[in-house]
Length: 235
Image 1 (cartoon, rainbow, N blue to C red):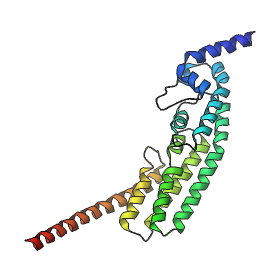
Image 2: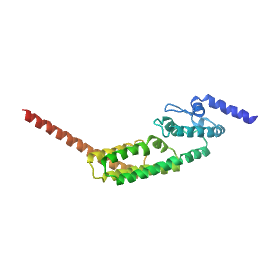
Image 3: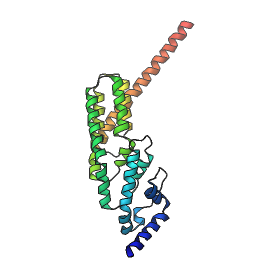
Image 4: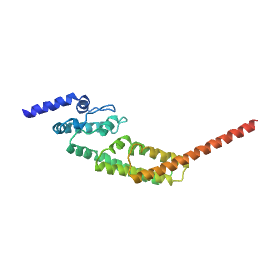
């Protein structure tokens, strides 16, 4: 009888929190959803809620990981996870295949960059970094305080910085090279990096921007000379 009363009390607490109830009951969350804080509840309620939160998390992941719109997945990852420590570990275990798959993609991508000479193909590979490696889902995962995520983040960011160096050494148009490197460095926006990583990234970004600025100036001067020559011919 006491258990039934406690169950009903927990149900009542859930019903009183509209956004949380919508997440748990309907597996729905979006960018504007504001969930309550974990500290708003006692440990007994969190223990009761934990398996339900796990079900919502995994359902949203499965529904959106391959969808174009991943706003719900990004929102639930970014949120404070309303579950106990045991369930947190279960969620990280659930995410292991995603982590392992992405690490493999990152390694394969770096190998392709190393072995590819065709400029058009290098452009396509650069787009894959933004879509598959340093994408919104992984960037928000990077914010979670967990050792497996820390290793995951370090691996992906290191690979992408090494790809910048690979591009730097390619025999191709300087302008295209620097545009590709700048595109990769932009993917790192809002990611906190280790000091050595940050320094390496800033070197690549600085070189790319400096070179592109010089190219723009030269382009403007050449265009101006062309206009002057045209005027002289017409006069």
